[in-house]
Image (tube, rainbow, N blue to C red):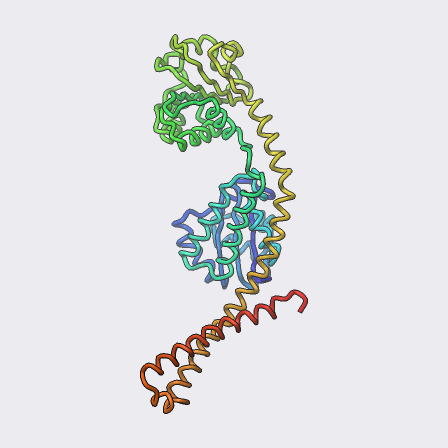
Length: 409
């Protein structure tokens, strides 16, 4: 198992923009990854890329020195300058053998993620394997390891609380909307089209909300968010004149002054008496206190969401030790699964040889005696020998496993 290695470029040691220079889209992977495997003589190769990591799974005997890693990443992206290539190669994490197996189990179980407990990584690992397997880059070892990795992650997500409570502000805001019983046809107005609002909007669209309006200082950026949610976009200065009303107002801009004053809130409410939800995700607050305290308003601010996020994250961290115990057990289990598989592959020739011996006996050694048998007897003899052949193969492999897999022998 010492021939299996992982080179990891992650958020722990490197800036996101530099990691991003190693990202390859699927067309680039189709063109480049096969050449990487061939050029560096890898027996197996898998390329994993997410928003905060790029990892290379390798099966070969090569020592992973910084010089070798630099050559490898320059092959992946020849546009890297010398400083970038050196920074990447010198800050790469290298795992070998058991440590590499344990590392990928932690990655897929989100213990190594920027946000502990986020489930997306398990899907990303599965898709990376499926794509690299389709390209013919992976073999029996990575296939077996991926299967164990997915099973381990599912075990952890099912039997621990590592992913139980959301820890992102956007996911918590969305959960509160659901708890308030906001319907899918609610009128949603976004003020601001930055990253936080974009993430929350994506959550809502994914869960079938469909009535969106976006106001933003830059109309061009507002249209980008509106396009994602299939809504309408307007310049921020048009907000006071908006006459279509709202059920949920979500505000997050870089303004240092409140944008939603009591006067603007009254205009937006359009004399409606129905309850309104305002989610203020800005620092400092974008909603004037008088508007937030209006009797029609259920006000949710960033401070309450952050406090809940921190509490949930601590709950997740309390589960890490339990998860690590599962991973250690699964790593040990994989070691034996790998040995068992090697025995199966080594004994793969046995059934062919046994069949050849049986055919030789029937067609040459005992051919005369067999030819004296009537058709019914020949059929019975063939069934008996086929049964013995099948049982012998099973016993041979089982015996080999029992002998070779005993830890103390």
